[in-house]
Length: 380
Length: 141
Image (cartoon, rainbow over all chains, first blue to last red; front, side, top):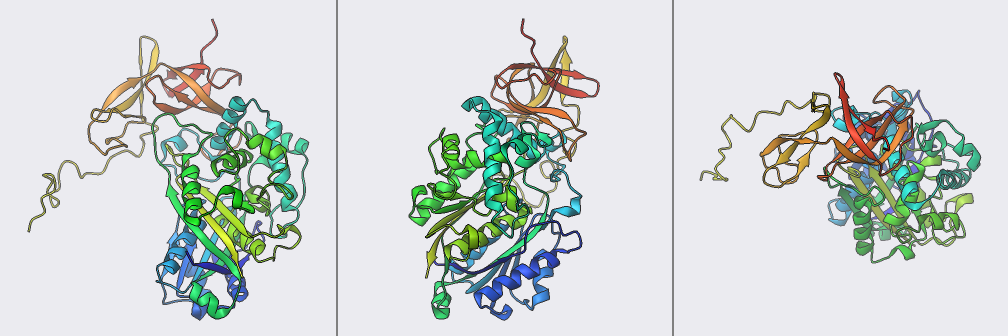
């Protein structure tokens, strides 16, 4: 693998009801290009991930900045759309089909007015009342039951996320919260309260990928993609262990094998903490700890600064925000900043390796519809 | 050279290529009541043995078009549950849970009648009225 991120940009996550999709994404794309030292005319492929942007979202964005006449791919994979776009961009570079790729992730959730994410109404579980917080709440209920834990543990995930997010000027929430505030917040789907759910918001992020030949020609540092894995879920009509999301286990194992690294080699992780319980389950699924040890890992401060691995230094989806199609690319923006020493007050010291993980859910019979895992290494 | 593919002629419109009329599969009458007990009308693939609810015309494991109706219930086990307070799908609040039936089939169900006093792994039973079906906690005897 030689595709390398050499530039990144995003807008602060938030609520931008006055902005169109291009209005959200153009500033992020321009920042990424400027940071990379790439002009729009150098770009020979664009991959744009989104879930709710409508037709030709990528074209609507890049026509405003002088990019045209090149392939533009629009990718919906629910929350994994942005990372799926990155996956296609990496493939294009590694297969020699492109030297310079602009990857964009964007979504505007304020168009729905708030509340839970609208899922596909054709789905029979949605017809019966399924919404994303309910799915994660049922995971949480089962986790607490099997592990003999209380909601206090779940609250600690949000406390950490908000503490990390307080140092991130791009986060939607930049204030800390206490465990008591988390536990007494408005209930959304028991046992999950409002502060254990990612917020509704809008956002856009972009990265520039180049070939190794191009990077050396430019003489720039970056975050090399060591592995890029995209899996779909596997449907079942029967029992599923909700504490063991097979799609993330498989994707992570394949990514580590491809990268020639293991979980213990990773300095920072941006994982899909759309709801508090997800972070605990994914510690185990990504191999950051053994099965059954996620609670101890969190309580032992092993996933924050000074611990074994810093998980979600950006504040994660809980604090940074989760405009669904944007998140997979925003994770890579965060990783790029850390691996190139540009993460400011939240910099993970001596970060050399990183992993990003994002799933796309909301489909009956599957743990998730899509899962994308990327592994990065700093290159100078 | 004509393509011979397992006996199907690709250019013939007929049985097998009409679209499924499945848009209301989740809300159609997919349960029956017999002798005071409620059963779900699921599907069973004769070749694979896979059960499907709501019933689909094809087996989700093999694609075989050999799915026949089968009654499931009335008793199952509540794997997990939640009370939903905010929802874009239905009027909240309501209780949802995954129910495992003895045959192995798992079904998302609305859970009622327990005054919120549910727990993982408790026995539940299907119930219904003229508007639909749900599960209830089985009262301890």
